[in-house]
Structure formats: structure tokens, C-alpha cells
Length: 210
Image (tube, helix red, strand yellow):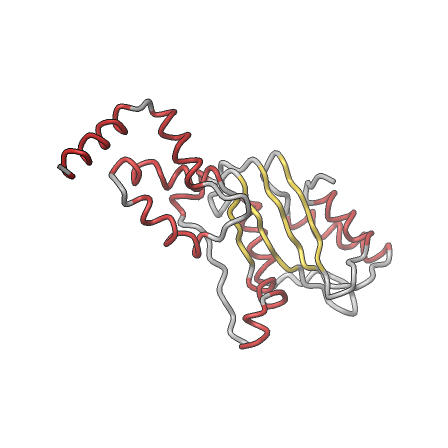
């Protein structure tokens, strides 16, 4: 009896139009907050294993309907309580290459390093390298519509001469976010705020919206 019931349910599902299937899976697999691929892949696995059709379209639905969060290495060191308590560094986990074209919304969390004396951007920063690869299209996020860039900047103050050099530096690096809608948020140390002039420059040069 159970086998007959399961077969009937499977037939009912297979008879649904593709648009209805997508709507149902979107409701099941969508979250109201940014998700980290490495944490949620095991949560959605039981759903994807329900039937072959879920497996076929479920993963694409998951990536298309959620904001995927990626933390850079230096950002994690600065903000991650786990790292502060243990000294163990978690490596940034990017979604599999095959899934990146499906992603429509991305929350990229990075730390930009500046030389204390000259205020110049530190070029060998791992997070800056990740940002440059992302902006160049090397990472394969070809379907992005919205990017939220969260930058940990510290609380250094920047004089006009510093900002002028930084602007030229950013333009020479060619770092501009490839998405129609780009939002930028800034973080600093506890109870401190990043230099407003630096915030304004980064908004302009990275292609971000207010």
C-alpha cells in the first residue's frame, strides 16, 4: 500500500508544470538571511535526495533564490570569535565553480589592509587578491544581480593626499564590482567608525550605491 501511495505522489509531482515545481522548491529552499554554502549544503541534502527531480533542479533553485555569503581570510581573522579564541584560521569557502553562475545575490565580506604610516593599500593582502579576482570575473560569478560588499577598514584617518593616491591605486588595480546593484557597508573596531572620506571614495571607485 505504501509503495502504491509513494508512486501516486511521485506521479502527481511529475505531472506538475516546471514553473510550479520551481515555485514549490523556492519556498522550501529559500532563507531570509545570507547563507554560507559550507554550512547549508548538509541541511539541504536530505531535501535534494527526496527524488531525482528534486536533485535535478533543487540545487539550482537554492543558489538562485538565496544570498550566498563569503568571508575573506583577513576579515575572518578580524571578526571571527572562533579565530580570536583559538588562533585557528578558517579558510574562505567559495561555492563550487559549477554553481557560481546560478548565484544572483552575493554578500562578500573582506578586510582591506592599509599601511599605518603611508595609508597606502597593502597589495599582498589575501582579501584584496580575492576582491580583484572577483571583480575581474575570474571566479565565475557571471549571473550576479546584487552584491553586498562588507568591508572591515579599521579606524585610520586619511588626508586628501592619501585619498588621492588611494584613488589612483584602486583605478590601476581595476577593482570594480560586476553587478547591476552594489551595496557597501563598512565595519571597524568596536566603538569606532571608518573615516567618512574613505567611505565616500570607496563607494565611488567600487561602483557602489548609497
